[in-house]
Image 1 (cartoon, rainbow, N blue to C red):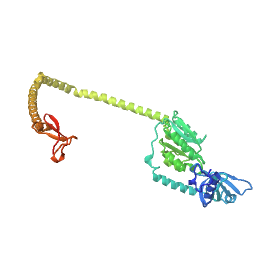
Image 2 (cartoon, rainbow, N blue to C red; image 1 turned 45 degrees about the vertical axis):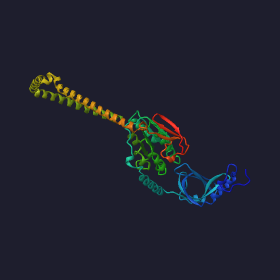
Image 3 (cartoon, rainbow, N blue to C red; image 1 turned 60 degrees about the vertical axis):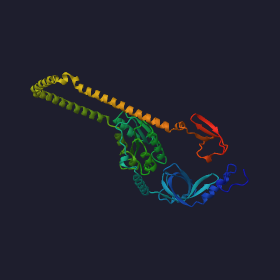
Length: 431
């Protein structure tokens, strides 16, 4: 390691790095300059030790699995209007502190305030307006449920009444229905992450044609995860149609608006996802009876109509048949039918005459073109260089092939090439 330690992090290298103690000192120095701030989250793992004035808790983000440890005075907790419990939504005024020895960040709490139900409702309403403006709740995004799904995905709590209601009522309506069940936490800190993972898993299953997200009733705080933005977007982004059955009929978490169909209860969800086999059998029997009655009436009407038609057309039909026979005999006696080839005789003569004229015109054109070609060949031969040489002219050029066009282009004694009709020879000019 080099003797001099870099002053800035960007100046460190593999050959000249910072020691851990210096990095911890730098982080602590940066965090120490941060001012006090207000932060919101859910309280988990609240610890109050008897006789101690310091309390310890973990403040967790309500949307993602991230948390920070917090120390706060017990007097601040005692000043709250109601005792603080795990899962409560709070805002805390705190100063970030970095423990260099442990290499961890925590918050030194100064004040704590609960987030009331009214404020949460206002935030939910604001989120509802934002997502509606984005189009996540638009009716045209809703998909129709399949009449008879091959498989049903069910997301519910572990050993919950909602699972029993959906499965039993669906099997009572259609005994052959097949369920793929994902039991996950449906309240508390892990609900959002677990439900979103189960949605993605069932949405990727090719055998699942509809997904049911079911949970029984609960308090306002228990149903808060179903108004979480991450869960709403997960439901809206699925390819498989989603049916929600959250709480009771009066409960309307925001995830209901993103679902394709909202069921008032888990029992109602079972009625929506599969048809009633007894009702379908009854409807089929009624349709079969109506079809049989209609066919019977139509057949009876057709038989009666045929009988009436036979009576009406008896004599008229016979007369028409006799008339048609007479006309057929007259047609057979016409010349065109007696001797069909007579129609072709005039056309055969016309074809022979047209063929003769084409051959005559082609022969004349060929002779004219041959004569023109001979004239052009004679002119080309007369204008060619070889023809010029035949008339007694010569071509004088230098050794490199350059044609001599002027007396000034050559020098005395320079070897020149002279080409005449019989061949070529060299010459040298005297002066």
